[in-house]
Image (cartoon, rainbow, N blue to C red; front, top):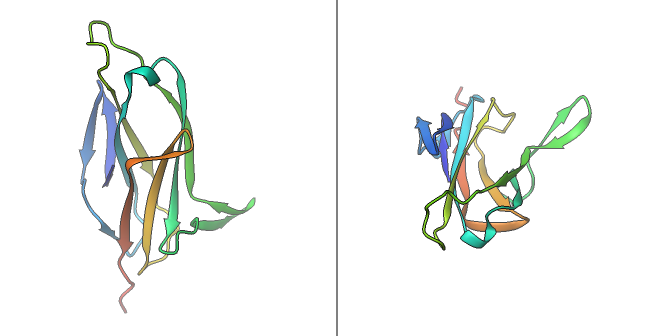
Length: 137
């Protein structure tokens, strides 16, 4: 899992721009979460549910006000991995993911953590923290 300014997936590879930061802001800016999952051979050929959500320093969901009320910063989706022809049985299958985000309404001078779950379970390396710079006068 890696924080970046932008990321994309093409031909099974991650392409990352401005990757590897852990401090941002203080003003909201676009960002991306880049991930490379390894799906076990026996977990291929079926659909998996994933979730990515943002927590504050206290482990609470980060929320913001919308026209529909209070909402948390979270993204969900489905993925599946197919077994490529000719690959040795038992080989884990790579799934690169690039999740690009617009500027988020998060507090300057704070600490946050992105958490990634696959089928409701935490995965190894499935969290990454960052700090927003404080506003200066």
